[in-house]
Length: 627
Image (cartoon, rainbow, N blue to C red; front, side):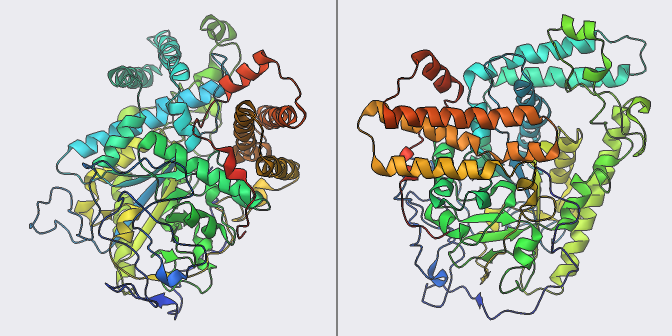
């Protein structure tokens, strides 16, 4: 979900006073040194430090082996490139050649790709539309842009991409994805029915061409997206990180530490199962942090994450370099801070690029314009956005019915200007920072991935222009992991409780519209911990307990709380929460009291909610963990 325009704690560029907590890197790790990185990442074994270890003896990026996780698979393939402290080559630069334009610092663009588990067995459902529109408008165009940039020897694209476990589950669902071509064909047919003399014809032709390209891309790769993401990581283009299993809002789960642990462990397993290696980084859901969460992260082998600006600026002690360098928590997790100057121009419709009059209007859709007869003939039985948008923003105050037709050529030209403006702004910001910092400045620009293509149609083109022109404009693109491989020291700070939601803290997920959910989560989590800790007496009951774990995780998705607060599809959100909790309690009753379950009901539940095949209910076993 998008962050607010004015995050709490974001202020002037006061880098703060130097802190005595800064610990210098040493080639030999001693009691008073911290080694922020090793020359090589992703060896076969990563041994996470004990939660009792001093922060001064923590490897932030080193050998990974999470002994508490049952799986021993997932070592990187021998062809996987290693990350070293050698400087990155600029676009078009050959080893030994001078850089085209010296970059004063680095820009790390971070995208968070996530959907709740909206799998539906009903073709044409609203939930199915959410997923298919994200495929059509965001994930497939994003892959095309990344692959084109990777194939161009004059470019050096770098992107940190979070793939949430629920999204990975949807991307791997063969039955669900088999319906995408027919879904897409319906939309292409609706476009073809448009009056050839319509003033919207140019926009319709461009969109028809785009959809044809999406259909071709889907067919060419057999509907397989995850292997393409894996390959881009192997090529060094992507650094893939994870998220909590079902995007649970962790500060509201912390009263039962085992609930947080299960969210994280399940995420690590699912990422490893699908990507082939354990994640080193994590996008914390809603960037929501609470004191002690770093202990949970490090115990699951998660070494770096990012927070909104005030998560660092309100830290103790205040970071010397503000949000322009990562910090290290006492438990040994590196945290990066959002730079609002680098994000506001991109995501804000009111103050940023997406609100430009030439760009495509998000809210005007053929789903509202076509007649009931046309929709019904296409098999669409309720009005909804179809992903078919043919108008432009026109003006910020312009009513939807007065929006002018979209002109693709004008929008494409504007994208180039905006990309150049953005890079010039980042280059100037980095140059200014470099004059007052004793280390290489870093700008971290995190966004919801769905901004690029779904909310902002031209977003993928904008990213393509950034990749093509960053080096020439004096901006070096990096992964978050690249920064931790630089060998520079990290200041030890306690991050501040925060989120990137409206108001900067937790109130968007804890208010009069959704607070009723929190005690339900707590009650169910405590029951799960009790049942798991007592054990079960048969293989069948263990399988029921695993399914109960899936239902509990699904009920904890922060997306439903967000929707209840936003006031959009509230009935669907409430129904989802209540459905998963009801299934959880029925499963637990069958385990506790030998209550018979209908096999038809059980088969349906396991079919609908069969994600996370490696889920282990033992993750909820009672254990004392700092919270």
